[in-house]
Length: 196
Image 1 (cartoon, helix red, strand yellow):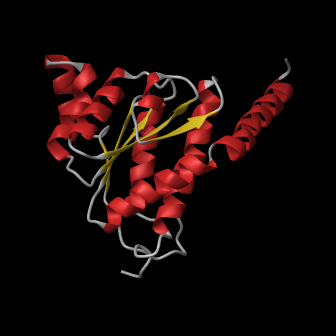
Image 2 (image 1 turned 90 degrees about the horizontal axis):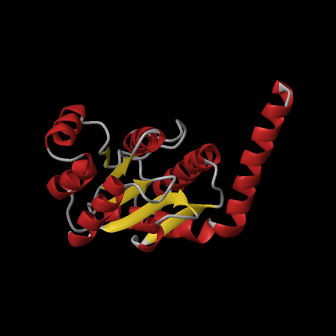
């Protein structure tokens, strides 16, 4: 395949996944936005966890909530925290105890009833994300997953937003679009959009 053909193929296939998501994912995106907005209105916060590219997504997503998605829409800062950023804790706990517990332990320390945890996993089977979800449920937190159409996480969360693809790149590209949509929906929710 020539480079120009590879470019066209990738962009077309990635776009096709997003078009499929219109048919399959809109109810779950709306449900997730409602859960997050309800938590913020009640004084709760959003915690996020994931590995690799999904860890980067967690930081991007949290930054949009604490900052602003768009410059022309004024609203208060919203409390979101990526559990992927404390490298001292993550490396210590992974080295001394278990990598599978790095998000679970932070949920136990920082989470409370009324908060929301989003687990981002393209496979739906990341053990440290699954353990964080289980810990959040014990604390009566709401749980959301951004994942693919496979994986066990789908049945373990309150809302699963599933991308209809098995290709990690297309899943991640779609996750970013979903994250921006969720932020846009949440920040425009009545009760959150007043000028600070």
